[in-house]
Image 1 (cartoon, rainbow, N blue to C red):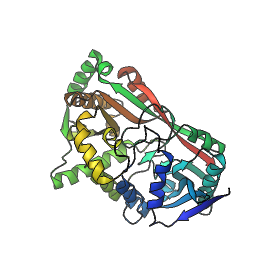
Image 2 (tube, rainbow, N blue to C red):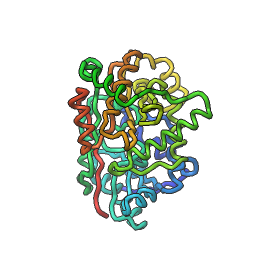
Image 3 (cartoon, rainbow, N blue to C red):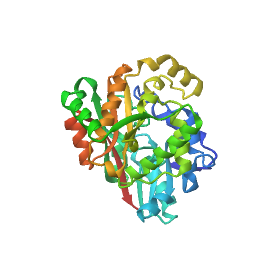
Image 4 (spheres, rainbow, N blue to C red):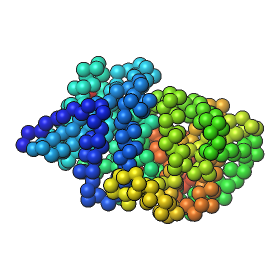
Length: 374
């Protein structure tokens, strides 16, 4: 049967969102997203990302049945940052059929080409500041919070559609039983004394202080990551939008500043892996999701370390190791055994070496960003 590609209007997000359920009916590792969260993410009138970007959704259909989806994305702030004309794709789902994958990629590529883009890169959902990367190694369990998941054959489909690797992203698993060494404990104590380090939790309850802390988090985040491959600074509105969402699931023990003699040196953002609760919420319904979170949150045994932001003046001083140690100690006090540090760029040699050698972590999953010229 012939494949047809249907472009969806910007306000018709539900068919695009619900299409994802068609591809994971029998996959025990898949964690259904909350439909409400996906609507908010894709809403081009609500999400401030779309003040400088645009997204076009496509569905692939055969004989009246949805067999794939993809979004084409322009990101003007990325293009301004890197002085390029790269376009993006995201939210890719497809049956195991190369012809369908080719049709989806062709639709996204054509839309981007019409807007003057010279390359197509992804998957990003919808940016590198959101969920990104295709899982290419480590399919033996569900993803942790805000990490992607997909069948192994997606890599073959994208390569068959002309994509090649642009960059790999690693996820490390840390175990309290091997992480907490005497050497790391001594290093922690030495660094705390040498740089006059103190730890201050981000204020989550007092509105004015939370607003001030979020502003400081944004400044550190944008400064600490500005030299990273593919990184685009978040606008004030984007950061506030993200912070309001993460606040709902954050544990104050895992979101904190490191200060050196009273001045900010860096911050840590880690979150409990609520996917361990939401994996039981196959419908993606908000109310049942809240019930699973309420009744199962004590079973969570993993935290995800999402961001360690260190200001340039404190680079190469071991501040990141201090933050890992603090998170581990607090997680242990909460009965949490594992931490996932993700994602780490494959060529971030210092961080990869520290996670592997000093912290005894294992790079147990690999995510890939693909690219091809248009």
